[in-house]
Image (cartoon, rainbow, N blue to C red; front, side, top):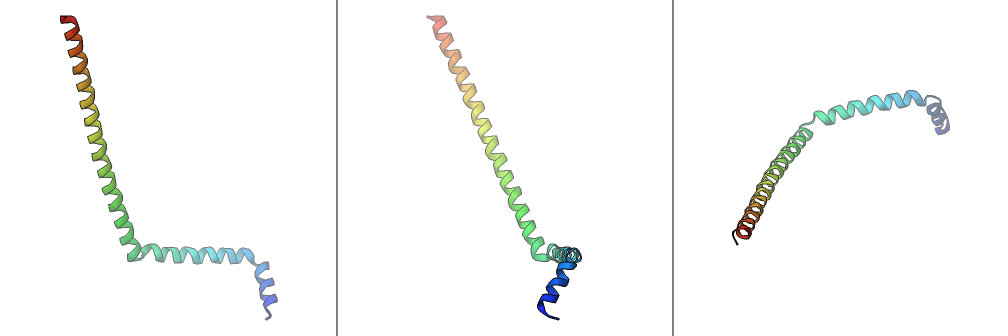
Length: 88
């Protein structure tokens, strides 16, 4: 068969080729996802994300506590100013 005949045959049966390519992709994808390397990489990635989440939560909690302290200090200063003005 000539190259042109092969190309014409492929063009005539392009839906069958697309279906076969889809099956081949699924098989190769399954093999890749089941590999130990991918599982180890996914586990390492998940551990990194969980660690980053924990660090972010701790940082947010520290920021919240600092903001609460600032608010309390501001209220105490306001009360002192009101007390001093009322006393005078």
